[in-house]
View 1 (spheres, rainbow, N blue to C red):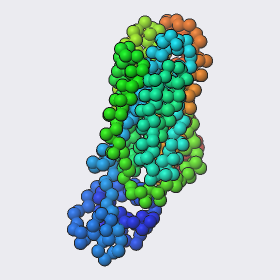
View 2: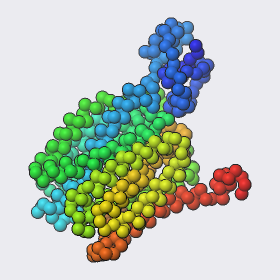
View 3: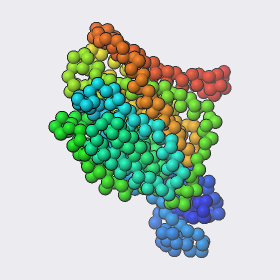
View 4: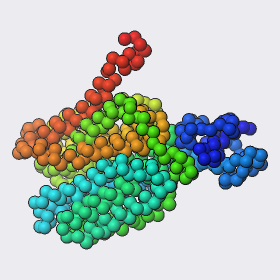
Length: 485
């Protein structure tokens, strides 16, 4: 029975339990994670060997070899991989689900005498979400540059989120809420997120798209129930008690999961792989994906922000508006998981992006703009939730399309998150310029939201068009047609 050990950059040897393959013991691989990417296709598990055959897998010399053998946990499955993914799902659902449910807080704060008529109330949610998007490259770079301290980075960000809510519960001024519920919470969340993203990148290789699809769907899952819980707490107890209760709930539900947030690779190999391969910057397709993501992001956030007020404008109750968002969140869960899963099945990520953007365009122009009743708004929520949010799962596939070096995965992901976040920051100023008409229910987009609907649909269509034009280039068409042009 032959077997393989991998010799890392620092002379340490690793035995993968996922496969059986022969390799000379003197061969040096380029990167441990690159090695994983190539061999994880092998399905035959390694057979049991005695210590005399393999040596002790706990960092002891193999007999006659004078090398160290260390067994890695299996990637793309196994208890460790699923524990990490489960813990990450809960963190994403609760800690990211909270700021994206800020609309409930915004309505409540705006009804308080001390904040009534103050347009800066929206800054609380904008800053909390914006920090998570715009801070992505910095947090990812920190996690990548100092991999030995990724868990410490989580321990820095997690309490900052909790303390931000607790501190917010003691403030009575808008600047105080902006600093605590906005800045402290947003900075804390983005600080802890990218070490977790890095861990997922280590544990999930072949099924990476599915794994990130599950994580992305977490906020949709919490979006089904979290707004209703927050609204009920605010009505009964006010914002101070609500913030304290949410902080306590987050601490209790996520604290016990912190030990499960850990990487798969040994610290020595994490350090050896800390340098990112930036060659994807030289690939035109990367910039095409960047442009498509930026355009999609510019129109992406408006439906979630304005569907409740749109529903109220056509005579529906506030409960109906919340129901539409809940249905859209449910569709988001299914869409993000499905798109992530499909991106692992050798489907073209460009084709998936185009399909998501085209369907989002149709949903905006043909459903939202024409909606005059609850039924059509629910259909819009389902279609847009599935395809609009499904597009966001393509970040992993986009990264794989422009670089096969695992060291670039987190970097490309963070850059694309940043670009989508530009739309989040600009949503307020853009909508302020578009929502100037009076409501006229019989008109397309009930007049007041007409420009907003058109802007959303146009952004989605341009997102698809950018990728289409890239593949319609003569050189690309020649390759696709086997040189027949």
